[in-house]
Image (tube, rainbow, N blue to C red):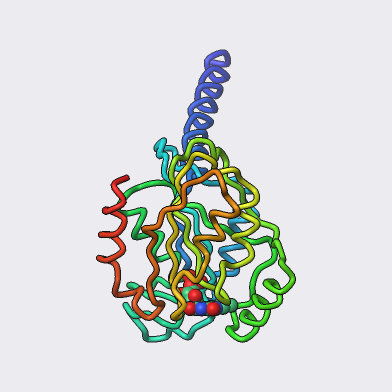
Amino acid sequence: MKRIMPIFLILTIMLVLAGCGGEVSESSSITPSSAAGADDISEANSSEAASSDTAGTSGDGSNILIAYFTMPENVDTTGVDAVAGASIVVNDGEVMGNVEYMASVIQQTVGGDLFRIETVQQYPLDHDTLVDQAAEEQDDGARPELAAHIEDPGRYDTIILGYPNWWGDMPQALYTFLEEYDFSGKTIIPFCPHGGSGFSRTERTISELQPGATVSENGLAISRGSVADSGDEIAAWAESLGL
Ligand SMILES: Cc1cc2nc3c(=O)[nH]c(=O)nc-3n(C[C@H](O)[C@H](O)[C@H](O)COP(=O)(O)O)c2cc1C
């Protein structure tokens, strides 16, 4: 009996360890970012950044990357359902930034890996403070440090790139992102919610930052007030890309 017990114990430990290994590899894959609520967003940002500084693989071997930056502002969503706020979409109680919502519809339509471009320094949730900070960063030509990095950029042929129009341009974090990688030989397809300015000249800027890439002229710009009702339009556009 004394000899049998240690063997039994070792077998039990091996079985437990094998079970843990499966969980670890599953949880390290990227799933759509789900912001719990505007108040919870900064918390969600920091926990993602803290847990990993590389991201972007879903493990399905996709060659499509959906990279996006979103900055939903602090909007009171109490009692609100399935509507668009100034820069958010509320659907079944879940609050998402406009870009984030568009990215999720695109991914549901064409698949691919979602990658949220986040900065180490978090942005203020208050609208006026955010607008002032964004203007200052633009004036300074800032390059905010990014909190996460794409694990294996070489595997992607298509980068579907989402960002809000900020002061007639991309947020400065997009400059950091586009200067970090070389997407030569790949296709970049932009999408952008906005408050009336459309893409401004951001498609040209992307071409300048990535001269070796093909920047699609079939990007999708949607007015921020229409994003929540544009699920079908976004899906049809994603389908039309023929990916
Ligand atoms: C700092 C800041 C600057 C903005 N500047 C512009 C602008 O110049 N032109 C425009 O059309 N919309 C502008 N907007 C509106 C955003 O493009 C719009 O609200 C967008 O839906 C935000 O997407 P998000 O919630 O995913 O971050 C600005 C918004 C912010 C926060």
